[in-house]
Structure formats: structure tokens, C-alpha cells
Image (cartoon, rainbow over all chains, first blue to last red; front, top):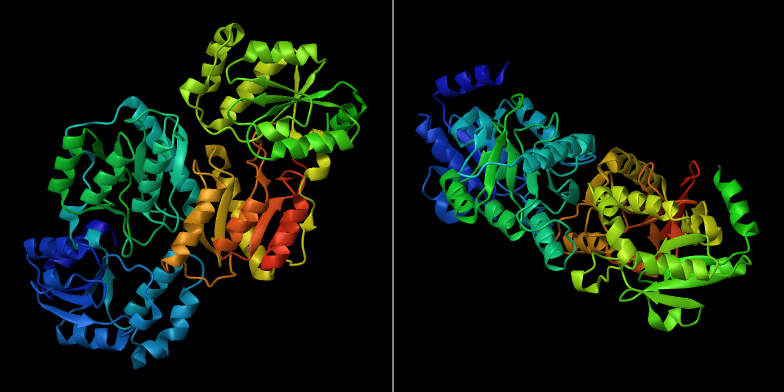
Length: 295
Length: 295
């Protein structure tokens, strides 16, 4: 089933979408987009991560990490068949986990999913949800209007040199895809300044800013791009690449020319704010057109 | 000409070897090794980087960065035909550069070498030296006794899980080789924790230690390896991978099981100290046997 077929199904279905909410503002951007598209939402907010003040503005239930049985019962009682998982969920502490009976029963499946990098774990969890009768959708399927469009989001466009850096960055990301590494690199004037792994994009950008301060970056300020892209074959239902105002601020501090993402396969939180900050700092935010990323 | 042929030539030649010294202790480890092998040395120490106290213990001249003509004259007056470039030379400040006439004349060549990453720059500089009648040798050719041996350097040996992480790390380094990125990665339990680019190995290890402190590393302390390897086709006459006591300390702070390097293609500064610190902290230092890295 192609992405557009699935989108059609999603829009025609009138049951509420259950949004399992981690941290950050993306869960609410998704919820608002779903509501704009005429479907109801129920937030299944994870204690310790989801923003309580914002959760309260939507129909919601609170769940603890580890309560898979409780989550299934709540979702069914609300009539949800479709679930979306969204928001950051940095390595939880053991004390934040509350295992319920069903979770304990599926632990062997979770452990067998937890081999190698994030992708294995997340795809394994998606399969478990499906075995219990839910359909796990990607944010790109339920909220297509907050996906990065192709081309420049603000005023500035990438130069030919920027495009060359972007092309090299995409090739590098493609070559490390099989290793389930991070989703972002920084290249300036053909020189690879940083490769993201477990630290995440924000910390990687901080590192580039720091290297520049210490005179370790050969290219002048205003040269170089951050490129974020999903791994080839990545399950976009989890951990879809996302940028927001904080990303733009990080790119500015790192002294880069701009940020490029894959059009249609990257979430942009607060696109208006992103475009304004980019314009205010003279950087570009660019959506690279390519094959549609299917989940 | 194979590496062993070249080594023979190097040992039979009785002219002094000119060691162009950057920072750190490696230049002196190389000098001592050359002296042990019965050849004389002249240190051509770079102002602002080479350790003055240690330079004074050897026949030497001081040069500033940018004095290529002066360097050529000094080396010829000492009867040096063979030069070795060794030691760290982090991005210099413009004020530390003193251009002499010959350097100004070869600037177009240097600029054309300065495209893309370090490899292009360094190979270009090597060609320039050769055009002026010198032979640029690698540290591995003049000081084979300070190269990493195959197998464990200290008491501890890698486990099967460590070997699996090492294998994955080597495959990852191989796949990013064409992009002229860094020379090191950290993998723990199959999960890529960090990829080195412009920041260098020490800062990458600090990052892993920091991620672990903040609970962002899934695997427990004592799992994971640092693997350093030259890029495929890398010119070992410049920027040969090196480890030393500080690397061991960084691996310990990062909570890893050990460090693996390519046997015969990695310099070990103070191997005795490295082995003692590794044993004292229960980590391994392991030389992966493979095809001999030719320059």
C-alpha cells in the first residue's frame, strides 16, 4: 500500500487517533494537524516526558513507561485502532518504569528486539503493537501538513557550494545507513566536521560551534551545512527526523550556511517560527526533493 | 617497492633523518627509535608546537610554519635526504605563520592541494617535498619498533562480544573512508555511540563518558570498544593513527572494554606505560592483524 493510499485510509477513518506522547512540542503539533484534518485525538501521555501543561488541553490519559497492558486497555476503551508514537524519550531510568502484567509477558519479545541499534528495537516494538490489534502509523501519515516541503522554507537559498556540501552529506549518510548510526552530519567546504551518533543533533551542533571557537574549523563562518535524513529503509513510524526553532539556533551558533532535510520525510515543528529565525539570521532551511519515504 | 624493501633502504642509508616536529611526545619516540636503529637524526622543530625542553636534547633547528625555503636549506645543509613529519599540528593561527619566498612561490600548489579533507592537503604537500628532492617517509618506515603489534598488548584480551563490536567498527570505518572523515569510532553492544570527525579521538571519548554520565548509553560500563584505523588508501606518511597513555585514560573514563588498532599501522607512544595503565584498569589494547598498510 503506497503512502497516499494509507493517507486516504487515515483521513476517512473517523475513530480517534491515539497519540503516545514523549517529550518536546512535536506531539502537540501532530495533534493539532490531525484535528485540522478532521479526526479526533486522544493523547496517551508518558509520565516524566510529556509536557503536562500542554497535554491538559487535549483529551488524554497518563501512562507510565512499561504499562503496555494499561495502554492497550485505554486505547481500546477510547475506540482507537490507530496509534502514533511521537516525541523524545531519552534513555529512561529504571525507577521510571512500571511494568504491568502484559509488559512482563512480552519482555522476551522486547529483548529480542533490543539487538543492535535503535532501528531493531523500534521495528520490534511496532510489530508487538500490531500483534495486539493496533495499527502503528507514522507522523508523516497522520499530519502531512507539518512535513518539510521541497525547496527553501524561508528567503535564502543554498549556493552551488552549499549544494555540493549537501550532496556529499547525503552520500555519507547513505553509506553509514546500514550501521544504524545517527541521522545527521555537518559538512563545510567538502570537509566533514561532525557525524551524529548517540549524542543527537543539538549536541553535535554545539560541538561544531565549539570547534569553530577553538579555531579548529578551516572554513569561514557562513560556510557549511547540517544535513538530516532518515536512514535508508528506516521505519518512519518511530524517530522520524525532525527540526524546529532550536535546530535553527544551533545551526546559527555553529556558523553554518543552513540546514537541509529530506522533503516529505522530516517533521518541522513550528514551521513559521523556523522560517522567521532562518530569515532573521540569513541561513537557509531547504527541503531536498527525492523519492517519497515510505514507512 | 614493498614496505620491507623500503625499510631496508632506510636502515642502510647513513644520512641523518630530518624529523619535522609538531607537538606531543611522538616526535621524540620516533627520534629515539631511529637512533636505536643506528641512524642519526636532526630535529626540525616547529615553533609554537614542538616541546622546546625535549627538542634541546637532540641535534635540532627551529623553523616557523610557512618557512619551506628555510626548511629545505637547513635539511640540505645537514645532509638530510629523508624527512619524516610527525606530531600534532592543530589548525594554526595566521599570526604563527611566517611565509618565506619559496613558500610564497609554492602557494598555488598548496591551495590546489587544499580541496576537501586532510588527505588531499597532506598528499599534496608530500608531492611538493618530493619535487624539491626530499623523500618523505612514514614513521612506520623509520621507527617500526613503536608500531602496534598484533594481539593483546597487556594482560586482558577482547571477548567474543568485543570482537563483534570491533568487526562492526572496522566495517563502519571502511564505509566512511571515502569521505575522509576521522579515524575512530566507538561501538558498544553493536550500537554506534560515537563517530570521530574534526573533533579528534580525545574529545570523542570525552563525549562518550559524558553520554554515559547522563544515562544515554544503554550498555553497562565495561562494554564497548574504541577502534582506530587508518582510512583505506590513507598516506601513512602523515597523520598515522596513534594512541598513547592519554588514549587509555580516555577509554577508561568512557567506560569501555578496550581499544583496538590496526597492527603495523598505528603508532604507540610509550607502549610500556600504555600496557601498564591498561592492565591497571582492566581494559584491553589490541592490535588487529590485517594486510600490511603500505604508504
